[in-house]
Length: 94
Image 1 (cartoon, one colour):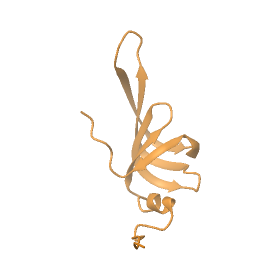
Image 2 (cartoon, rainbow, N blue to C red):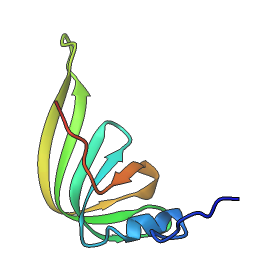
Image 3 (cartoon, helix red, strand yellow):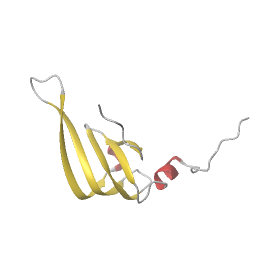
């Protein structure tokens, strides 16, 4: 049997804990994405983010592309059941 390296944490949420007080990228249901400083989280993946840039992607009638709207918030609470993905490296956009 192969040994598994658990230096990053033994539980999945431990990986989020390694990102405390660092910027994270969070993808949410409903075409929303957040990038901000992770202040706190819980076992449900609810999070408190600071200096947040929120991007909302929406279809515009008559256009084949998604339209992106951006807004900034000083502090934001994210309910855990809306979280799809959390990473410390935001994806590159073309």
